Amino acid sequence: MHFLLETLRVLLLSLWFNIESFIHLFVPRRRKSVAGEVVLITGAGSGIGRLMAREFASLGTVLVLWDINQEGLKESAVLARESGAARVYFYVCDCSSKTEVYRVADQVKREVGDVSILVNNAGIVTGKKFMDAPDSLIEKTMEVNTMAHFWTYKAFLPAMIANNHGHLVSIASSAGLIGVNGLADYCASKFAAVGFAESIGLEMLAIGKSGVKTTIVCPYFINTGMFDGCQSKWPRVLPILDPDYAAKKILEAVLTDQVYVLMPRSMYMISGLKNILPMKQGLLLGEYLGAFNMMDNFKGRAKKQE
Image (cartoon, rainbow, N blue to C red):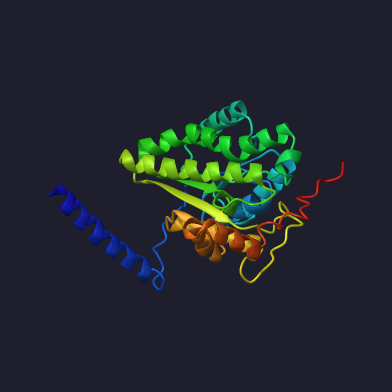
């Protein structure tokens, strides 16, 4: 009897959830207010982190910016103030170091207060074939792109749980959903980031903390310099993303409590097909989309001359 009742409940709710999703294709979801919220963004000294800081600033948030680049942080802080942030704080922090993350997190809690929106954005890419990548760079990739998320959650999640209020934003990658030739360590780090964020989201629901939201962002290459040299074989299907567009989409997802954000929209279909197609057909599709060669001309972000 319990089996029949639970099965009926699942079927009816599934029908309603699909209808609800269809409705929201035409009716925008209601946006929540984040005015006064304390927003911490890692990797905020440049690129998408800086742009997200400006987007959040325009909504009257209190911003806490982290980066390893002090000059970049200062520039981001100025831009955030100009964009309307209630207050802006910035801290130099090496997110690859657990000790450093905990130290700076304690400083933030003393000087600013509890963080209610955490955006794990800091990331690095080696752009080397696995056998050519030095062990130290592989370790650094995992430390920044994955392990840093563990330590920032450990530092700031307890207050969110206590208040049953908060938002955890993981800037992952489409390379955290589909393996890419030439990005073995990067893919591993982003797959781990996606799995970690999904698991913590479920853990919050399981302990009754539905007020702690999760957003997992999986974009294709964003034109910030991080993946300079990479090319899209079919730009109409998989365009290199405009940074401003990506930042606005991420903000919109947070404001509407969207759990998954894949960019561009074609990534929803591509990632879905990966899981249902026969392996040979999946490889054929990958070859067609250029997954075997997209890293061939990788240069990465140019380093400033001393």
